[in-house]
Length: 165
Image 1 (cartoon, one colour):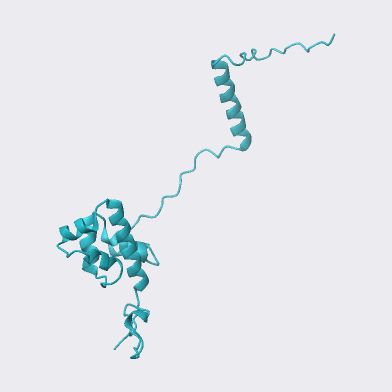
Image 2 (cartoon, helix red, strand yellow; image 1 turned 90 degrees about the vertical axis):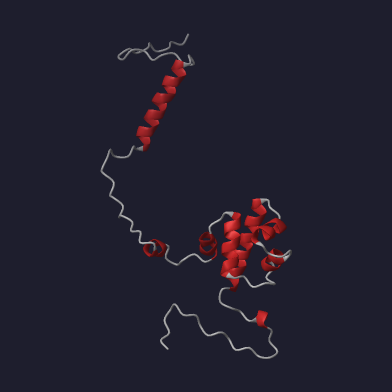
């Protein structure tokens, strides 16, 4: 059998003394993460677990057992609860196990992004001095408009120097 990177490793051998839940399994953390997200979504929905169980046709306490890990989480649980809560199941999976290369998702969906167009050369950026001049001019115009400063004298006018007595 040819082993490629998409195949899961063989499960570990169990000894007779070792309980099943003590063996680390692939995806345990991810499953617990999905359960936490689902529990958060239930709280945010402001609906009781019992109401959700009724709508899904589940027996009383089933949802609590599922969220506490007493019942193994299956993919159909995620889809059923996602639909009931009005959330996207895929977002739960991507939140707890984001792809190493996010562009992979776009490739799988057949979406190709156009390369970013280079910016057209425009005016050169303002220097610090340019910004200071503009700020002073604007501030002066606004203060003059509100009558808080006197208008500037005409160009070419120089006030007489103050004489001391």
